[in-house]
Amino acid sequence: MNLSIVIPLLDEEESIPELHHWIAGVMRSNGYLYEIIFIDDGSEDNSWTLIEELAKENHEVKGIRFLENFGKSQALHAGFAIAEGDVIITMDADLQDNPEEIPELYQMIVNDGYDLVSGWKRKRYDSKIVKNLPSKLFNLAARKTSGLKLHDFNCGLKAYKNVVVKNIEVTGEMHRYIPVLVKNAGFSKIGEKVVLHQARKYGVTKFGMERFTRGFLDLITISFLSRFGKRPMHFFGTWGAIILFVGIGFALYLGIDKLFINPTGRLITERPQFYISLTAMILGTQFFVAGFLGELILRNKKETKNYIIKEQTNI
Image 1 (cartoon, rainbow, N blue to C red):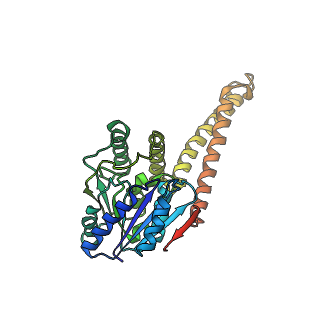
Image 2: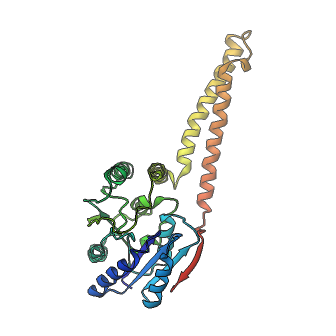
Image 3: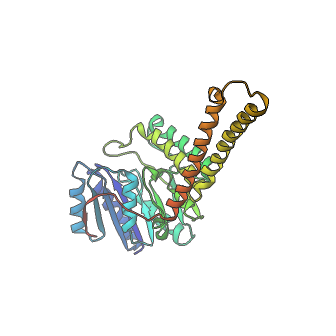
């Protein structure tokens, strides 16, 4: 199979038939063997009914339905798990991503040897305040922290080698930073392609203002994991040693002062340095313990998939 098209969606009943027809036309005109995997992320409209009908009429269409809204990251992860194509394409279901871009993305993976090609919506038709400005801030921060020179980390239209999607875990809300996850997994050839962006034709965006806070928190998380995810003791051990050194230093100072300099002065427990020393030694020890636990968890980690799937069709 040449291509797997993975499409997460939420309440997109108006777009699904048109998007399927558009993708199928592009696939037929290029002679690709393909599958389209729709992941219904807890829709409350008729999206799943339409997916079932398409799956009955077309053996290329597959569907997964979540019990409730788990988020785009979990939807992508579920789609990646069952995708069989040599090249995996992800795109949104709102018709803002153009399927005509797929052949060139496919060629960049197959012929040019890229592990991941990320779309770049150079010209956007979203609200400048609600989407464009926050997106630029996210991308700037992601470039600085990850070292990847991409303009649009969160573009829904991307192409991957099959082996790439089988070796990354997209959890939480990390779909915004999939290129960073791919880099952290050891895949180094990551490219970018300017793609057409279209105005939303049906419905409204499903992302609210809360995504800004979540996006920056996820960026902090992924920055930490990028640097210390495989060696947690390097972070916790370093800070533990520094804090413990401060605590021991204060303790030595108090002991020397009481024994040799001012033996008739205040009790050690009446001095603020005593509490600073005690607190620092406790915190330093806890940091060391956290580092050891992180190393143990890392060495005994087993992959789990714990999202809930309500129904599957044509799989």
